[in-house]
Amino acid sequence: MESHTCTGYGFLLRYTDARYLDRPKRLRPAEGATILASGHASDPLPRVTALPVVRLQPLQHEEKTLIQLSFQYSKEIYTCLWRFSGCTWIKELKCFAMPSQSHHIHELLDALEGTAQVWLAQTMQLRDLALQVRLWEQGYVQGPAYLTCPLPFVEKLFLLNYSMNTIRTYHALLLRFLNGHSTLGLGQIDAFSAEEINRYHRGMVQSQRYSHSTVSQSINAVKFYYQRVLGRHSVRLEEVERPEKPSRLPQVLSKQEVQRILAATENLKHRCLLQLLYAGGLRIGEVINLRISDVQSDRNLLFIRGGKGKKDRTTLLSQKLLESLRAYYKVYRPKVWLFEGQTGGQYTVESIRSVFRAAKDKAGVKTKATPHTLRHSFATHLLEQGTDLRYIQTLLGHRSSRTTEIYTHVTSYALDKITSPLDCL
Image (cartoon, rainbow, N blue to C red; front, side, top):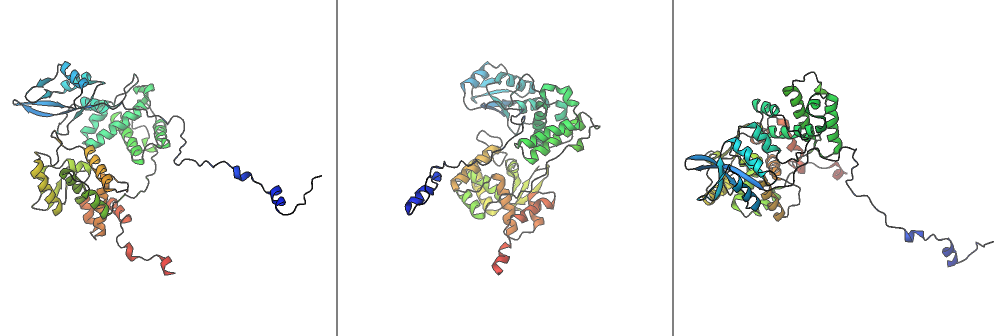
């Protein structure tokens, strides 16, 4: 029988458990892991691989209105256009051009299929809705079962004077809905009940790939299709479930961060763009739609035409901004739009986003922000300066004061005068 009597260090050696010395390192789970239900992993409307762009813009030549084709040099595109009988090479202008009738653009899309995408300059007014739908859908993979958006849907939205942004959003979301059930065919989709529509949107929510606003807009687009286009008023679409809207506060930059971003922007045009977003509380779309005549220096106002909801308004014209704009005008000499691209026409939304990202990175600002954050910062800083909320609502173009009141939750105005009860103990 083994003796358990032991003295000194021998006792410790016999009864001490040393297994913890060889314990393997604990593996901690990665953050953000999400387990999805089956059937929600893939997008029913995948996009094609990125292709180069051929940009169409108006061209006046020999007293004729033509369409100029602009693109970064590509041998494949150049060869396609040489073979395409619908356009000609204008030697003195060193560019391809074509007549402005819509059937020529249809033929161009056929000629460039798989080689390039066709984009229209914002100055071009398109009245052919079938062509508009085709231009919007050229970026999607169109397999054998692909369903295009029904033309009456887009026509109805135009007739009811919906904004172009809303029409394009509704088109994309209905297209996703239709192609999510494309194997059934359009006839069977048109006969869906509210439960089947609800199941589709429940899947969107469960996939966690779409925001509340995207799901809500999808419900609106699908309801519009069934009620206003198909006339299916017997379907109880009010039973379609909407996800609860999250209450999130807008991200705001401090005045010091805004100053650093503006100071890091060396290009005069780029600095004016960012100054406009902040100094007047403008949206990106409102900046690119500004005309030279909209800068009303004698009244110290900026005229914003056709803002969100097709509303016109006026906003502040900062004196510092006015000085920058005058210096910018002397250098760049824009013709129609206040900000124009290198080849003419309006500046693009993506260009402004790129300018902001580059300036933010160069300034070393770590706060998560987009160009729209400058609009939020404008409102918050005005409130912190003591500006009445009603005036801020007018400057921002908000229809309801409740929309503007969200900035009272992010401002530090008067908070420094409040003492925490902990400090009074």
